[in-house]
Image 1 (spheres, rainbow, N blue to C red):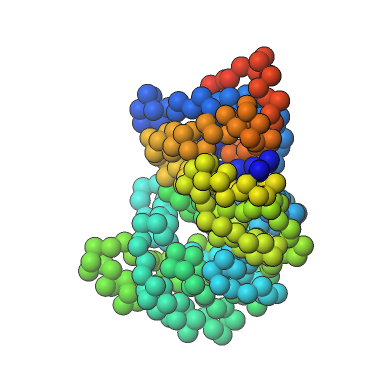
Image 2 (cartoon, one colour):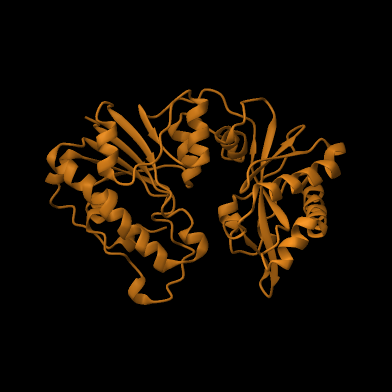
Length: 344
């Protein structure tokens, strides 16, 4: 019987960018989640879910450096570990407006694999002399191989979605060259036949890339649990670095328990709420939390009460981990508080 569950849910309690269009939609009704949070022991963890995953796999990345998301996530898309310097260069759509230049990510672009391949070929032909190579193993996730550390600090794509990109552009000693490179890429893509065809079909243009998550493959990764369940490319890449198998995410906690009975502990990464804050969609976030309440939190509360689950470690994306054990059922003085008290 699985005794310990690590549950990583990016965006669950990270709602600072949500706008309450309707006050009635402000906070979801999630009594099981409230019970778990109220009875937990709390510890500070990295502020982002990506940082949490690196820590769970035993990898300490200096706070002054970018998390090497590119070098690790590409392993989930068929790449092999190497000593190269990799940077995410994800395809985006930029749109000027009164508030600056706003970014939309690949979820709204519906990029076909042939489109990604042709744009990458044009990029490589243009910038080969600078030692840059653009790899597009997935239409929505692109990776740039560099000959050396460019000395850049970047902001994750999730932080830039729906925002003015100007305060979020790469910074560092070489930032001037990289800002100029972004302008050159935008000119190259804008003129490409792929985007002319998209314009004729009234599709948003793939008119830039977003640089983030640079670094090399870290060494020494170790699996945090015997069973790993994730669809997130970073989690799957970390599992590959650790030499561990990773399974698809179960639909609900009951399916997880059925598949994990022979192992003592599991890590499950749920993507349900990852983009809600970035999209500014409070109504969808409320729906997603309620969905997780019925699919996961209610099961976990019941199993902790009955002894089917010994320990739950909940990482909800707010810079905290909430650890709940079976003894929580005796903590009557820990009254559930409004969910708003836990939001970041």
